[in-house]
Image 1 (cartoon, rainbow, N blue to C red):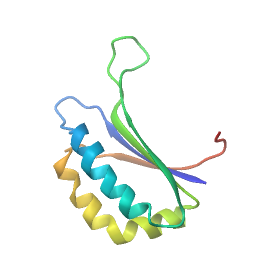
Image 2 (tube, rainbow, N blue to C red):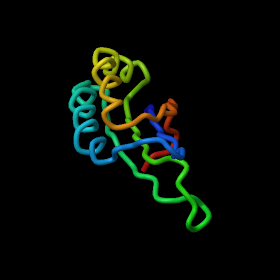
Image 3 (cartoon, one colour):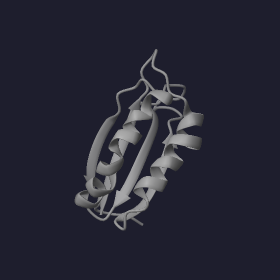
Image 4 (cartoon, rainbow, N blue to C red):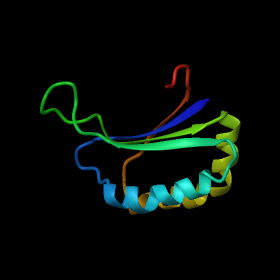
Length: 107
């Protein structure tokens, strides 16, 4: 299984509309990508804090998609890339960090 992590760094001065992201962008993403048979799930997380009490979270938000394979993700994402990426200015001006991971343990 493959996990695609989309991480939004918590940088001072950047904008991130969590409500729009959770209520509009992610339901659209799930509808579009979730139609692919290789889609296995998704989670969205809000950063609350860092290791030291009272410190800022490294990421304001994260999204993790699970797919059977990287090829499945690419097949699901590519037809909708313009729509999904075009919606980004509606919720953020942050350049996300994107990482592809092979899931070795999952319970």
